[in-house]
Amino acid sequence: MKKIYAYNHQPIYFDFKQTVERFFVEEIPLFNFINHGSYLILKIKKSDMSTFKLISVISQATNLKYRDIGYAGLKDKNATTIQYISIPREYEKDTISNITTKKIEILEKSYSKFPIKIGQLKGNKFAIILNRVTPKANLRIREVAQNIHKGGMPNYYGYQRFGEDNKSYIQGKEIAHSGKRLKGAKEKLLVSAYQSHLFNEWLSTRISISKIIDNNSLDRASQLLSYPKELIKVLAQQPNFFKLFIGDDMRYYPDGKSYPLQDFNLSCSRFLARLESPTGLICGAKTDRVLSDARYLEAKFDDAELYCLKGDRRFAWIWPENLSFSYNEKKAQLRFQFYLPKGSYATTFLEEIAKRTLK
Image 1 (cartoon, rainbow, N blue to C red):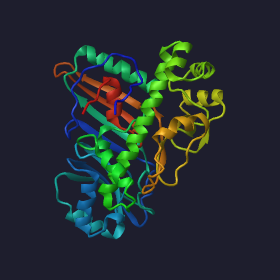
Image 2: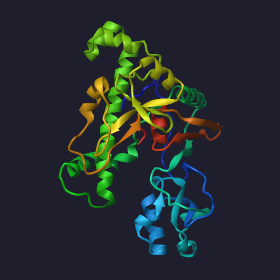
Image 3: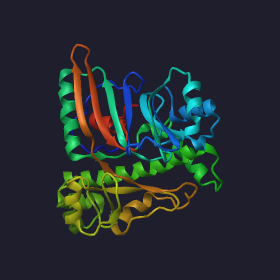
Image 4: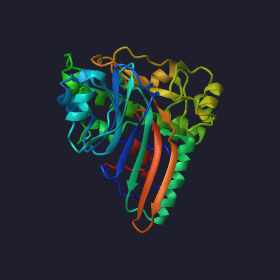
């Protein structure tokens, strides 16, 4: 897909590669572990290893089935990552003694009454090293990143979601429409890539609509979008860049209940205050659809035939936090640190800064 960027600055050049030496991620748990209970919680540092491979190593060390090993989120192979894993407490000795690979380091252990489940994390802290950063680019990266920190950014799925050729969603669509029951984690990943592709396409369209309204007269925007001039006028009056539509699913940010938008003034003010954000559809079984005008925009990116996976709704707009920078002019190297809510991609943030695809 052709990603539409939200910000209007000129592209910024820097060298980025996702490697274990230059890309660091640390999970932030959803809650503190109480340090007693029937489950062992391991804080694990790993490098050059996907979460699925980590689960495989622990399974081999303990003879546990994959379903008995809990984790909150998937972490990339091409990175140094810290994440939390849960296993039944009686397997503690086997786990500690039988994990011998140098790619895994157990940093801490604690206990809990409950296993870790997918999605049970607040977000992730990132530290990324950018090379070939000139002094001018260093200043521009900081300026644009601060602007995005204040104004937020579109919550696109990152390129990691779509395989080496960025086309895994095509295979996922074929699997989803086959009517067959999904076999194993690989097929689920392919179908989820298709879900993610549809979300990205919807979000890109919404960004494009917002830019047209922001950058054109009422008459011209009405002509380009084929919307009534009165609707354009109402949308243009919104102080937020990402334009909200009647029926949008607004969810309390960063987690909480949602409701359908009916009052522009209320929702826009809460959106600007980072108290809530609109969501987009991850189509699938048992998923809420939006209403009214928002549904008209969403329907094109829905797939009623996709019912082999559960659907969901995903924040369309997020805010990076806790930005910090460390620049080495001699090496032309910038270390960039920040925090993103769960499910969000650091590479999406970097691409919005660079204004180009980084893969």
